[in-house]
Amino acid sequence: MRTISEEVQDEIIVKKSRFLATVRPVRDKEEAEQFIARMKKTYWDARHNCSAYILPAEQGSGVYVHSSDDGEPSSTAGKPMLAVLEGAGLIGVCAVVTRYFGGVLLGTGGLVRAYQDAVSAALSRAKLLEQVQAQEVTAEVDYTLVGKLQNFLSANPDVLGSEPEYGEKAVFHLYFELSRADGLKKELIELTNGKIRLETGNVQLRLLPVSNG
Image (cartoon, rainbow, N blue to C red; front, side, top):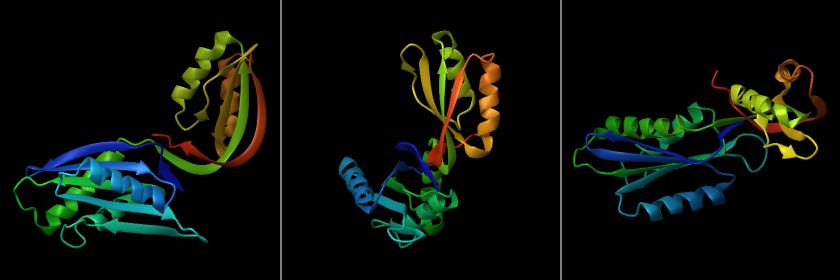
């Protein structure tokens, strides 16, 4: 399962028409429909607010998908938008593309490309999360080493880490992809010259950031 961490937005201009794409994570159909309604209310003056979403199936495996052309010619908006979400392997995501007509007809092929490009542009701004087997690790260090751990998290964007908790020492709660856990723990020990206490917890399914590398 792959999704995004938060709502993102971008826009493109095609032959004077403005295509404003907003994409956000959603948990279920109700949340997706509420988001679509919010976009329609926000951009009430637009000619079209086309939408697409893909969700985990309520029962069993598979997915549930929905799309709407919102007045555009059939299959020129919602389905192409959905194809972008599916092509990215995303689940639990809803996209709305708001179109302000610029006075120039694009034709069916032009519309398909424009709606796809708008969603792709928004997704390029998104932070991706992927559900994987993750190793829980608690790291405890002196305050003087907090900066090094924060640099470690910045250098490893696929590691999920908490803000430090401050007591006698600083405590970080971390989640490593299981296949990388041993290597990352070794890296932390080397980074701190062994001045770190690591406690290994449970292995569990977690949504972890996807590394750009």
